[in-house]
Length: 150
Image (tube, rainbow, N blue to C red; front, side, top):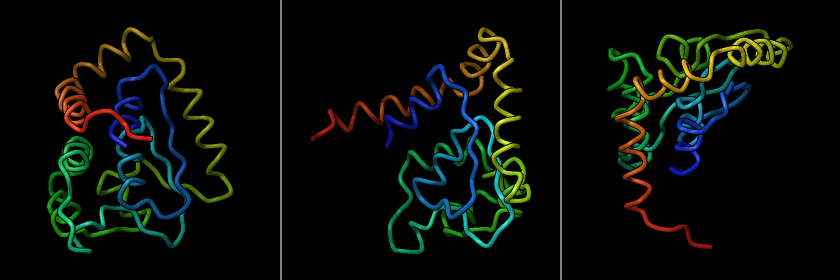
């Protein structure tokens, strides 16, 4: 998972996430590394459930949460394992906007067109400025884990 998240953050592809259902644990992390996160109105949950199931939240999701989630809701979203619906996920920081389910894919495509027009130098330079220390730490975590096993 660390390799996937690192590739999403540090790779050449700009990512628009279209969320129309539950995004917990790894799904929540994927939202946090996407450039743009659009959700559909609906009855589903987003967040880190690990603490509610007796597991500590590991450093990798905690790093991502500190980068993208609202500081006032960080503790509840991580330490307490509070999950939220799509509308509240905007306030927390898991999503950027919520649209009608029928409009989700067209909204995602429109946002993808918008961010595709950003200068590569400006985009990469800003990723390095904003995410640089976090990317370095994720890279170190991936290396500590060692090579993937088949």
